[in-house]
Length: 316
Image 1 (cartoon, rainbow, N blue to C red):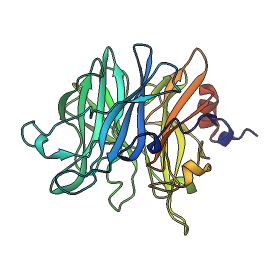
Image 2 (image 1 turned 180 degrees about the vertical axis):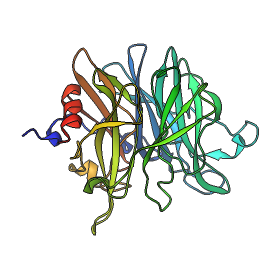
Image 3 (image 1 turned 45 degrees about the vertical axis):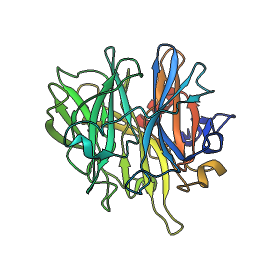
C-alpha cells in the first residue's frame, strides 16, 4: 500500500528564510507562492521586534524573490498599506497569511486582516500586476473568516472561492465555498469539508488557492490537532470536482507533512507546518510546497503532483 506521508521531500537547504538572517525581525512565516516573470515570488508574513503605536505586535506582508526557487531575497518594505485609506480601511492592520491567485494577467490577493477595536478577521481582496504596487478592491468575507482562497479561473461563468469561516476564535474551522459574478459580491454558500475527519485535523482545517489538474481541483489544506502535549499543525490535501467544486471527490486520510524537524517543532509557535499555497509544474509532475515553520522560518518540500492527486482519490 502506498504511503501518502512519503510523497513530499524536504529540501536539504531548509530553512530557506529564517529570522536569524534578518536583524530586527521577530517572526517570519506562512508564505503565499506564485510565479512571476521567471521568478518565484513569496508573499511572506513578517512581524518586527519594534511594535507599532498600539503597542501590539502587528504582522505585515513583505515580498521575497528568487530566480532558482531556493535562494530568496526578502524585501524590507511592507507591500500592503491601507492606513492612509478611507474608513474602514484606515482601521486595518496585521496583514498576514495571504492567498495569491493568478487570474489572467492579474494576481489577486486575499489578505486576512484585523481592525483596531475589532477582534474578528476579515478577508480583504487586492490585486497587483507587477508585485511593485498594490491596489485594494474590497472586503469580500464576513467576520471570522481567515484563509479565503480564489480559484484561478471561472467555472461555468462564475468566480469561486474557498472560505474558512468561524475558525481561529475558539470555534472549529471548516471549509466552505461561495460564488461571485464579479469577485466583489459573493453568495451561493455551500459547505465543502468539515474538520475532524481524521485525528490530524480534529480541531480545524483551512484551504489554499486550488490547483487545476486533469482529475479535478487539488487543494492543499492545513489541519490542527490539540493532544495533551499542545497544538500541532499538519498539511494534507483534498480534490474537488472540476465542474461542481463544492463536491469533494477525494482527500488524503493521512497528512502529507507533519512537524518533525527541529525547525518545525521549536520556534515562536511550536509544532507548526503551515501552507498558504503551492506551485504546480504539470510538465515536470512536481509540486513545490513552500510553508511556514513555527512562525520562525520559511521552508520547501517537493513531491509528485500526480501522486498527491492519487493519494486523494485513494484516500490514503
